[in-house]
Length: 418
Image (cartoon, rainbow, N blue to C red):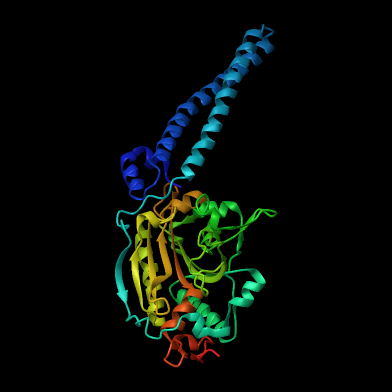
């Protein structure tokens, strides 16, 4: 949610910023018009309430003194009717204003790229097309797509055997690493109410991707970002307590509507997957630095896992409603012969916190202010397993796995698929 004061006071700068990301500028004009009407109505409604109070006092005085109160009563009825009409209009305008404001995306950071921009590359990609196998060929029946589809439909899979221990090792290793960086591990609920999705900007924006349970008015979250952001909804945090850092592990659910025929082989794009997510509540002046720090942690994880990757400054047109700036880390996948998104990290500035009414009490005193939030993927488990299998493959079809995971229960290697 954008700050109305900023929209009023810096209208042309806001218009230029929204224009960069291709937002509907007519929607901005509607917000400003509704805000202007609302501000005009408020003093009128308050003035009529004051008149009602004065008329009520006059009626009471007339009755005590035995005087004729009919004129005062008539006046009070007239004022009450006007107050009711204007109060109804004000309520309608306020509802329309909130709905229109909710449709505006966050303002992009000036350094967000105009087009996707590769800003760094790390590791030596293996050459594809010379016998490189993809993750399904390397895993064999350890990734059981056929039985997953039989059970739940397409884009579901059973993970079996040694890959189960690989997943658990990845999760535990990542959580321990994040705890070392000051993150508190969290296993959040995955069923959430609508205000949590609205608060994080997934509604209204990505309804087509979300599983809805209408009988219970609950939704299956597509990322633990939703639950972690709501952890302090409606609260005021002391500046001295910041940053508040959380590492959430959860299954995630996405309908992948509109992705028919795309990435249908294997577990790259599925309806259910597990993920370790980083989330931070930070002081407004610190969000840019913390966004960079989350990116550094993602790079540290990929580097220790030995996965070749590149960092992409994502185009403003692809940011999503809540992000002011986003970086993706794309892993090299020999089975596809190209880089594919593995993790992302976003600075959502005050957009989510304003919707969720999360504020910070400044250390030096004064009124609470809206704080900032940042988020980033530590480990998207399924896609990370793909990257580990394909980049660790040997000519005989076996797979060497990173040594950092063996202490957490992962096998040192996988035998060739049967």
